[in-house]
Length: 444
Image (cartoon, rainbow, N blue to C red; front, side, top):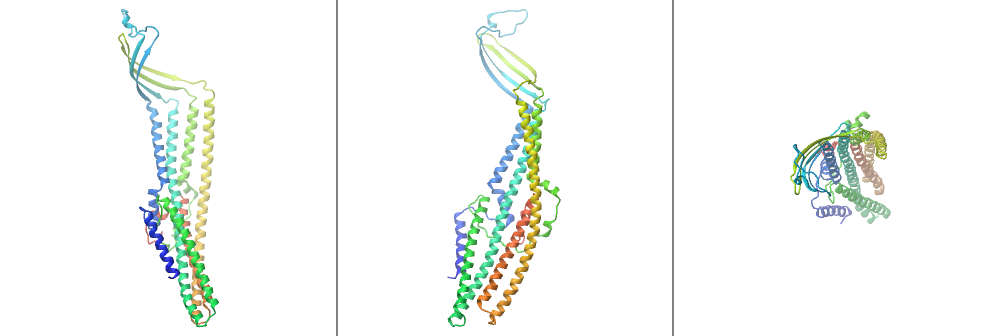
């Protein structure tokens, strides 16, 4: 069995075993579909969404403080002397039935805080900003997963292109091996020519084996993003470069649409509200309490009472708690501001780097295209010379090896250009272009 056929059967066997050992594997034949599958099934995104839901619930908890709280109660009181149970009415008629040292009561009580100091409003606003930050963090987690996905998928495309180039080279080498072996037997060429070709075949087979291991690693990593054991779909090699329109220059103001910047800004606003709340603890607080109660003795008649109480409180001493709380809130606000500025600086650097990488990738692709054209012309010339008996098979092998490298470099440059294009979208806070066009002529 030839080496090419053996490698082909090994590849088929590994693919079949991957499907058998990983039931329920999701199929996404292009990058756009794969991004949608990751968005639906990635555990990290599920956790981030749950955290955002928890933040929304926290907003409702904070708003509920506006409405105070109501409670029902029951009590049993035991004094060491007889106490008056019923109120005294005129004319006073006192009897022992009015007194009982053992009493019980039950009723309902409602307490409503009046937010004259603005503490509740500050807590609500802070929690609203934290909820917005949680939503933006979820969006940032989504983009981070997309970044991992495109890196792995473009890596698979790069490996597939390199593999195809080496397989074509291996096929040509095996054809030369047969011709050269025949020439050696009839004494037309020296045996060293055959050894040269066989050594080149072994080298290419080693490269293909290494590519198989790298491919397994990338597919396992993609499977983890899909919450599956393995990603086993075939990968289509790009056949054309990305659109030049995606490299259009954008001002730095476009960075403010990035989720991580929005999250950092929301956290800064939340810390501002926390500082306001800490300062408002120095102000008086007001609450209103309404209570209805049935109070009765064990041996005396009871009565129904109700009351409405307004309470104004100002705390003049707390052991320095409010000073410390204000200092902490100020420090947290400074931390949030510094983190926002750091996030902005990193975002600006990422965008500029992504734009430069896009331009560099386009130039590398142009160079690889020119190199492939030159290698093809060289291989064609050398093939003609070999057929005319002007060069040996070993000389032709060198030209074919150069062509294989040029094909590999061209495929790698194209996949790298697509990766740079994806990263440029991500640096702007946008999903890659393939996300909106799931299948389009196999260019994703």
